[in-house]
Image (cartoon, helix red, strand yellow):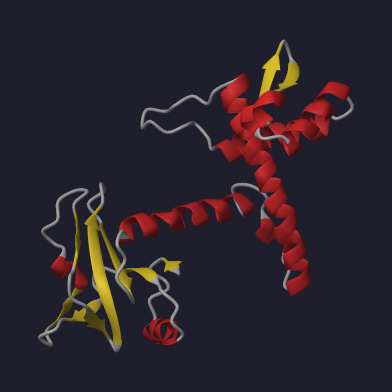
Length: 219
């Protein structure tokens, strides 16, 4: 289980450990720890000397309250410390924790940066479950469409910091929104949307405005 700094409750960590659920949680720099000699200190003191992009994994476990954890720390490019606590040893804790950003980006797409899921105000489990299924399908369709547009029709421009001007999801969602609202009455536009829904984006090309499927590569 991966979590940010709001998931650092001691009782929560103890419950996860008692139920044999591995976790890797980010800690606040000023959170207190106790080392093997019984000395109490802020966790940042064990990683204060790290330079940008350097990291360190403490070999011995320590105590945060009553929870026994293994700590890892990295100095980020903005100078902030990324300190992780785990209830077991992770071979690559930072690579594992990086997976949380993918989850975070997905929820941003489902919420404020995409489908505005939170505006539904739903509270009933089965309704939420059905909406989540529909949003998952919509997310895949939009992302596939963004991949296709970036590869075939118009690649996304890069900004000065080296990142694309918008995400593949947003790129595809804007295209789908415009097409569904204004172009669905056109046969070719409708066929294109249907193909983008079902076909892998890397097997779709475009020739003189016509969608071409690479059936041979599909095997």
